[in-house]
Length: 153
Image 1 (cartoon, rainbow, N blue to C red):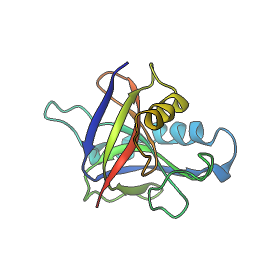
Image 2 (cartoon, rainbow, N blue to C red; image 1 turned 90 degrees about the horizontal axis):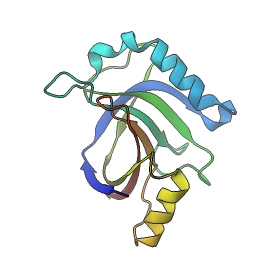
Image 3 (tube, one colour; image 1 turned 90 degrees about the vertical axis):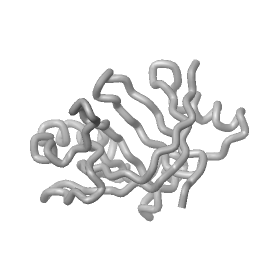
């Protein structure tokens, strides 16, 4: 099982925001809305040199918006969206977050569940220092769990 250690400088995500207060299934509803309205932000999305989208994020933060983990891993905010240029402005009905720079452990969702990733972090002497994010690589369609282990202020 491969776990990658990745440094990611601050980045922007423009998406549809919701919270655990919205009830069961809220994440799926956010993704459904974001996907159905994607054309509204497509030109704002960051792309690589080949023109492929940089990535799709299920970004998370606590209710203070300080990018700390969800309270008890069960209460917080979620942003279903795409990585965009940091200077991009979110269109009406969309929300933009600037995710701070972190060092992450990246776990392949086909190999690790969230709880397995958290076990790995603990068993290998790392500390969770921020909110965990979901990432989908548009080139492969593969999903990853990004676990922040060091915040770069």
